[in-house]
Amino acid sequence: MDGTVTEQPGRPSTPDLVSRVRRVHGHWLESYVAMLRFDIASQRTSLPGFLIMQILFGVGTAIIYGFYIGQLSREAALFIVSGAPALAVIAIGVVAVPSMVTDRQTAGTWDFIWSLPVPRSASVASTFTVYTGLTFPGIVVTLALASWRFGLHLHPTPMVIPAFLLGSLMATSVGFGTAQVIRNPLVTNVATNVLIFVVFLFSPVMFPIDQFPHWLAEVQRVLPIYPLAQVMRASITNGLVHNVSICYAILAGWTVAAWTATAWVIGRRR
Amino acid sequence: MAVAVAPPASPSVAPNLAVARAGPRYWLHGYWRMFVWDLMNLRRYLPILASILILQGTGLVLGVGLFFRHIPESAAIYVVSGVPVLSLLTVGLIFEPQIVADQRAEGSYEFVRSLPVPRSMMTMAWYTVSLIPALPAMVIALLVGMARYHFHLDVTPSVVPAVLATSFTGMIMGYALAHGITNPMTTRQVSGMLVFVLFGFSPVMFPATQLPHWLAEVNLWLPFESMATIIRDALVKGMVTGVRRAYLVLGAWALVSGLVTARVVGHRR
Image 1 (cartoon, each protein chain N blue to C red):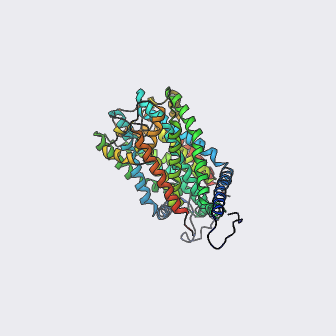
Image 2 (image 1 turned 90 degrees about the vertical axis):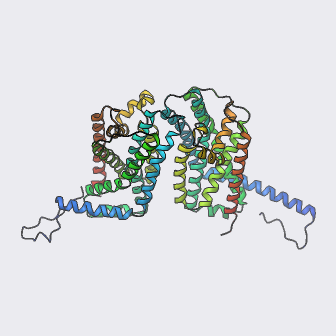
Image 3 (image 1 turned 120 degrees about the vertical axis):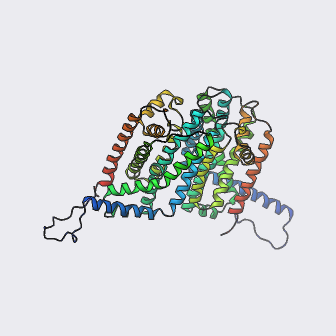
């Protein structure tokens, strides 16, 4: 707080309250902008690395699937290309964000950040903005390279904006929330490695879900990765995805759950 | 090598009083002590490591099958007979550099180097330890693969040299990396990259014909395809050719890595 609000005994008048709320509102925005500058400046060396990593992961995985399957039908190639951006986003949510959180846990940076005179929600919102924003160039480059590799032309619809925005925000939020809840960098590191393995082999991102055993398909439908791939695929292809609204709802649910978990962890005093 | 030369002892000195830092008995003793040392060091991690390798092997065998709507039998055989390579390389090539990086970070690296044991025996002891979690993982992955895809492997006695050559080459390459690169961060990046190359860009679990021509050519000179060739030859009848060449390629990689290791580990500071 800026200290200009003087505590008066009794109930403040309505105009007082309004100006106070405005000031709080303004303070939050100012804090958010300041934290954005802090986040970008403090991670200026690691952010380009994460960007390259997500492109390599998205494009590399698409190419690798091609090697494994050998002769690709057009439909299989379309699934791979339209799944590549989801993998690039997952790389940010599963690898980049948790590793940033654990680095800051090890270095004690979070204690410093929480001690700053800014609302904690502004700090978290700034982190989410930076990493959600980071995924966009990665998505575009991944999509361009994968389409070129498999010789396909995609037809993006205006739905790419909500799909990629919600998908990236969900991945960033879940990665951030999980790493904050786990607290132990070693455990987070192990979880990251296991997740990458599971995502690569057991998630219906690059191939249709009906290739899965029934029980695994049912589990995947409520986990965040399949809906993420579906909303992104729906926005750049025609006729491959049905019932996309339920996928949006599941993604929104995971995002809210991640925010709740984050608020619970960082809102507590220690 | 680190074998300390004992001062020229006069013949009158009783042999049991002199510290004989040479000869097969000294080497065997050093090997055994280091084997026990490594085992004790990893006693808490070894069961975890074994579990990770078992999950990795069975996960790969089952997971790659999901890429296909109906997996062709040849693709299934490639996957199942390629998985042992990954099981055998994970500890020696991927984890070892990270373990050494951790030792450097916590300062125990110099202590281990100061132990009065020949460095070659340290390497061999580590090699033996690295096989302990890998072998059961390999066998389980093969059994799960056969059950899942309904075929039988024709295991021949050549599986023994194939497994030993593959695991030794992987271990000595990992050793050279671990000791040659001093920055722990670089080590982690290199081992991360190796996983990617090994899993995705080497014809270990799929035929080299599915790679672009230039990449298939490059892989002829890298060790991973050769490892898959000799292991597959020992498990499946008539599927591979060029086994002798594969052994030669592995031998060359092992030799170069051994020389790098000897140079890095053997010199005094």
